[in-house]
Image (cartoon, rainbow, N blue to C red):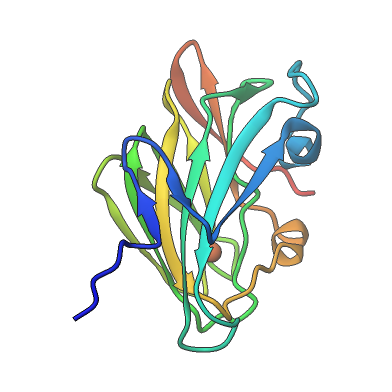
Length: 184
Ligand SMILES: [Fe+2]
């Protein structure tokens, strides 16, 4: 029997590495529209990185594995967050797994009802395909969250642009404040 090394390693104290791992970096200049107000961050500040490992074509049955690393930053008092999305195929669910740091998984149904689950080391989150989802780093260190989702799920960002999440998460004097979203 032939035994080979795993093609990808996921060091929970570091990042995912391997020849098939792709990395996407979101900088402040490309993320500022997510926030209510402009902040004073340098345009090139790295807000978060998404590592992904895709095996096979984007067809039903194949899976992606990912790792999001959100840095502990605020923009005009608003906690750093991912863009957030629905899946193009609303029948595709996803698992998130808290690796380190702490924050929130914000969820929104198709009527705009918005709530959140606490994310911390070891927390496991099943995300129904009919829920929009966004990660928010509320802590003082990197927030790392692993994910597993179907290769054919797709990302529907336009629907979130059309109906934004119902709350914004602010930090005021070290305390979290949830601000109901304005009609946009
Ligand atoms: Fe997703």
